[in-house]
Image: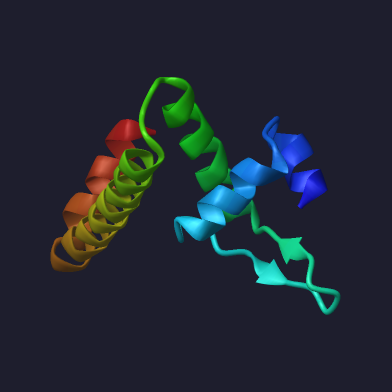
Length: 97
């Protein structure tokens, strides 16, 4: 946990608070040490950003969850559109490249 806190420029207590809030629940090593994935570190960094802007922890957690849900919905929407209209997806890809 110390290394993760150092990478993010936060305290270990901050990371524990995210675990308590169930926003980031790291895996545990055999010795009981917290192990954070890159995704979890990005979530923790986003939480720190929101809290630094004056957002309460519980509100920051909700914002991050909603942002994550929106990104997933947009990804699924894009996939479904590509499946329904494969010729248009290719044409749109050509235009944006």
